[in-house]
Image (cartoon, rainbow, N blue to C red; front, side, top):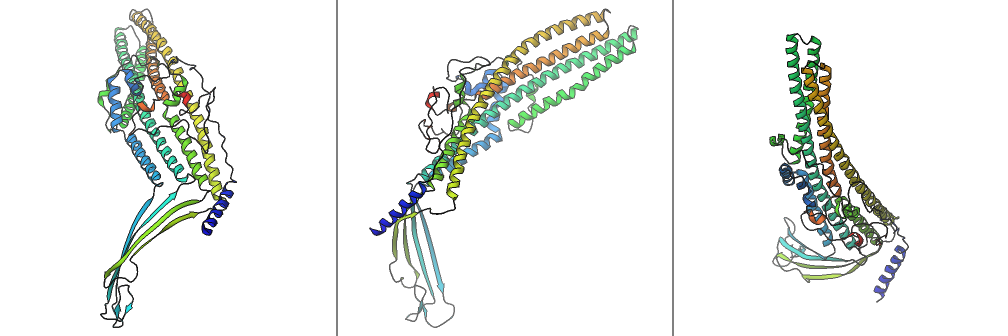
Length: 516
């Protein structure tokens, strides 16, 4: 009893020392969100649309569907994300296994042979032996089992396992975000290719028109109705149009090769040179209520997991201040390989409890705890910044969509007016009512209006992609490699901290008030 009393006294003293450590448990997680978007429409329901997980199908373009499927199947970056998830889950399982007893086995054999010396031999234990009969070679073996189990009284192992689980969940969210980013990049690049093809088509028509004009002016010169100045003017505009062609070709080739890389290929797809749809890409999507992005965006869900991970790591650092208790046992079996049996008991069993008490480490553990708590507060601040950036992304995307829609409508009107003006100027020029300068200016205005329309349509399509990427998708609609662990709204997210929902703001997605 005296031994147990002494051990208890030492443990109480250690607890008294560690109990003097104070912990900073304050952090503001609440982020106030608007009830409606300032740009664009806001849906009344917070439930996600049924096709949000496959949002790219809304464009109704078979080429987009094909490219997305190729990218999901062959993109190396997605393979890297998949392997990171597998590794993180394996490490989480390995960390969780440390809470269970461990058993190790060991075996050894020894053979001793006397090559020279007295006539006497060796006994089975390898000692000099002068009895009868002598042996110059003896052998022994020893085998056993070692068992060890740390009793997790202060939650060190449990917190470490929880931190590993949250780290794995964060990697899963990174994989979801990588998948969404890949799809958005594929669709965006496809629209950029369509825009480049549209601009190249406009430049091609301009080159053909300038060439026809040059032929007309030369014919008029031969007939004596035009001079050399008009010929050189028409030739200059023709060469200027041809000079713009290489830039347009470069934009097309760049987009082609980018799509090839995204889909895991080294060769551009020639079928993409056929111009796809040019209508219906600027229809604005209906934005959900702002609070839903807390459940839809993978980067926000990852920030939540990082808060939980940092809190668990702080709990580990706090548990390091307390004693560690463990149970250990050993079973040894010894015997002889050659000669007589070993004298004594061949099987031994030993074991018992043990304790490791931190006494003095020059403040190392306390400083580690302070660092972990600072990292937890950093994660909280990072979460709030992520939410604010998410709102910014959606607002900017919605504003861009409405701006692009208005620009497309007005630019179509401009193209129609420029086309009418060019038709009139060309007719008057051929009839000798206007000069070449007016005719060239009218055609220049028309081509520029067509180029601006192609740019506006590309901008609108890309803005739609940006909106879908900014909204994200609910985790249950985005496939990962196995279901992620569910979050408990009442679970501590920091060193002994529970989040209390603020009535006038929106907190993390694991708070009950933002769930549908």
